[in-house]
Amino acid sequence: MFERLSVAMGRPELSSTGLYGDQRKRLAARDTVNGIVIEWVGSLTRDEVMEKCLAEEVPVGKVNSIADIFEDEQFAARGNLVRLEAPGVGEVVVPGVIPRLSRTPGRITALGPALGDATEQVLCDLLGKTASEIAALRQRRIV
Image (cartoon, helix red, strand yellow):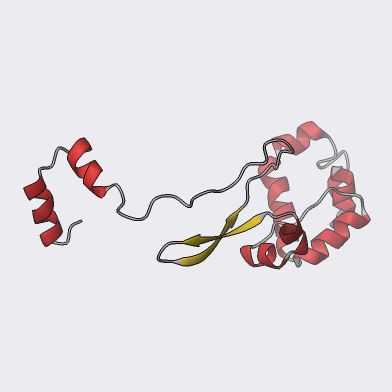
């Protein structure tokens, strides 16, 4: 695979036995080899890297940005993004449950408690604050 990657990069000499063709040599120089690959990837667009790697049968896949995910028809078709209403916020899009199992597909029933929902309990039960202490904290806008 490294030999095919070297060809895709236009650097077939990298996979020679004198350089990094031998796996032991490649692993011993991992940082150097990774740096060469990183520099090559950084010099091209994602589509160019994909095209060159696929042409040489090098396994490759794109890393999606958030914008890519929202625009990708496959994400929408698979239900990977779920739209829910959040009280006081409106519609929120969150990742769906993956993997989706046939008998127990999973579902999202809540987005979690509202901000401050457990403040009183934490202050009282965990921190031992009295009602007057909590009132003073609220008056000073600490909580």
